[in-house]
Length: 148
Image (cartoon, rainbow, N blue to C red; front, side, top):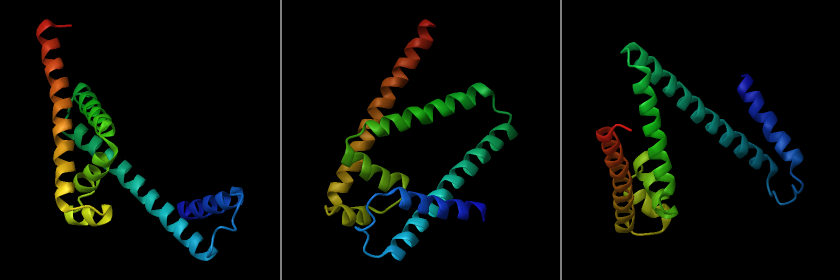
């Protein structure tokens, strides 16, 4: 209940701070949509935090060393950085298809392109990610051999 009240209050504060409310055609609809979107965003963030907490609980349950947890976290950070380096359209399509689980046809419809274009973008994203991951893998193996 407290989260719901906070979300509504935040929306009203944003509206008060917004200089020009005359551009909004239907204020009631605007408020409802804003509250809905903020609520969905809050739920999404909460689910991610719960998922991370569950992962940490699972990790501790299996007595995984701190070093392994740190390495896994660093790998996720690295992969996310590599995804951010993808070309904008390629990244957008990759995130929609792979991370959001949307079908190629759905993404193609949203993007106003052919399904083959979507397939090409996803293929390109995987290729670029494989290249960047293989580079870091080769570097890590090299440093292990010379024991830096």
